Amino acid sequence: MASKPATVRTESKVANGNGNGSSGVVPWIVAGLAILGMVGGIVVFVWGQINPKQDIGDVKKELEEQISQLDRRSRESDSELKRLIEQRLTVSTHDEYKLRKDEDTKRQDEMLRMLAQSKITKEAESKDIANINERLVGVRSELTELRNNMTGSANVGKVLDHIQQEIDELRKPVPTTK
Image 1 (tube, one colour):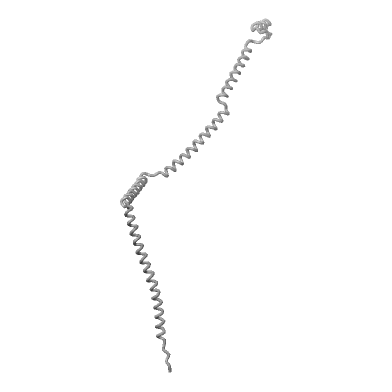
Image 2 (spheres, helix red, strand yellow):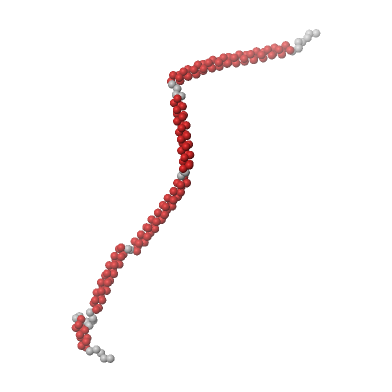
């Protein structure tokens, strides 16, 4: 095949106006690639700022930690609730407790009424003390009398011993003289 005529090349050079024989598409490709690169860089930068992988991992760890804390708190609350349920009073137990407390209160009120009714005045108390003192004087005199009697009976015992000795002497055989 034959080579292309030179006039065609000249026209190409003249047609694009740059004189290097390249078509006008290359600068546009380079410019498009540069713009695409800049846009891609901006997108990567913005995406990294909005949603960086490290931050996602940190957020994930933080959320997992919060979930585990909530789960632990939930278990603690459940155990506390179970403990409270075990300790709760049933209605019948509460009624029984209330009935016993009412009876205790009635008993205490009755005791207070009795104490209020049996209240002793100072005059009555002084009379009672005087009677007790008179009784004590009587008891003391009786004790003194008993002590005297005991002392006398002890002398009687000695007298009885002495009499017994005399009886024993009298029972002894009398020596006969021959």
